[in-house]
Amino acid sequence: MSKAEITIPEHLEMRIAQLVEKGEFLNREEAIEDLLSTGIKAYKTSGPVDEDDEAGFEDDGMMGHDDEYVF
Image (cartoon, rainbow, N blue to C red; front, side, top):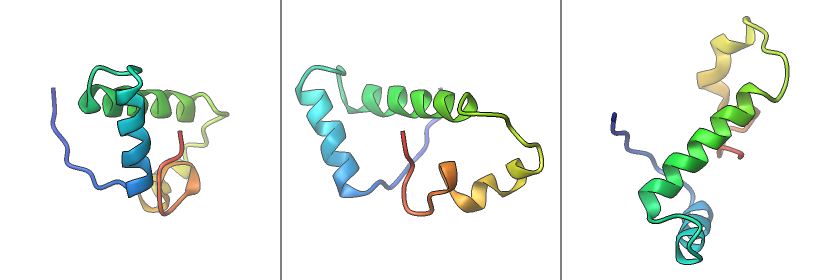
């Protein structure tokens, strides 16, 4: 499995910690992996994909948000 280092806003870190504490996930790593996977699946199925729009994906952030990723 590939490894990646990310920086996320503190409010998201707190929400992830709460989900782990509530038993929704075994640990932080599992939570982040599952939430990221779910977000990517939701992004792919949220509507038709225009091939021209994919070129700007890296610059605009997921779903057009510059400051955070929306799940």
